[in-house]
Image (cartoon, rainbow, N blue to C red):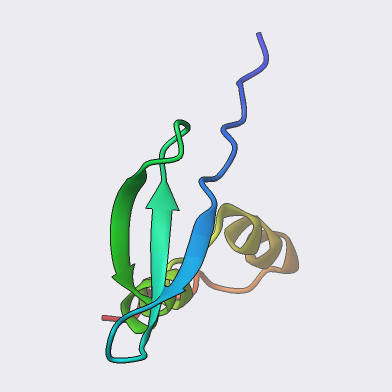
Length: 69
């Protein structure tokens, strides 16, 4: 049985009253699920290591990339 691939939740880009960029995650119904600052969301995305990157590094014979803290 093939595993189902989940569609990633879309993020909507908004601006706060102070003018900072925000990301808003929506539910399937279109309601806001989570709102966070662009800086914080982007930082966590950069720190995360994707499965594709891990397998590509493994095939190339390179060591795993360490997670930044």
